[in-house]
Length: 221
Image 1 (cartoon, rainbow, N blue to C red):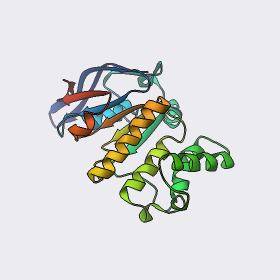
Image 2 (image 1 turned 30 degrees about the vertical axis):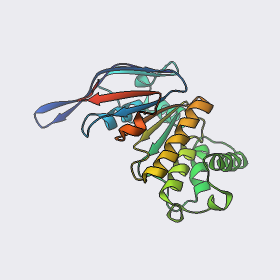
Image 3 (image 1 turned 60 degrees about the vertical axis):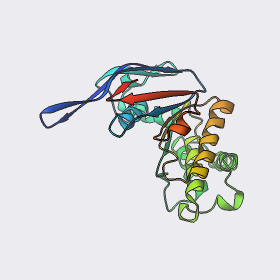
Image 4 (image 1 turned 180 degrees about the horizontal axis):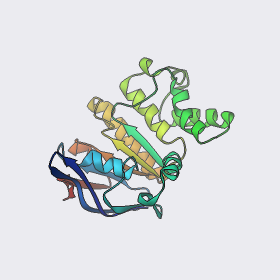
């Protein structure tokens, strides 16, 4: 499902060239729940940005479901990210003046889904991640951190993506709530065959995924 070959990303820092990702190779079948771990500065966030087509590599290829993301035009990338990618961020990234329901409906609106269908699917997804009916109309400020992260996961699932990328999704949560969020992601991978890649510093959580990649100086160990 995901095949990465010889992926490299370099940056210029003054007179020096920084190798953020160095000839990286990995392969994941559909429905795998994988973790990427490593120290700060190891290249985790850069790699996640490349996998999510938020940045272009210096060289190498990224294939998702047989499509080479690295050769797509900017216009095709926008459409691709809407249809095939879902993102879950550490700080939730919910739009504060929209309700939980409206936050989940938004990606479907960009995908031109009919309004009635958007609302029905958003309610179904929120219920699936444990957001009760009376909580769905609340704005993010009236939800706990764990609830906001559940809404973010529901939003990431809105357009039935093949790949979900999660950047420290439990980083702002207490350990008990973090485990609930982790279990929720694991269930999605197992039951819906969604491929999920989580960047995390929590080695205990990472050890419970299907596969762990350790990143150091831009290389997999």
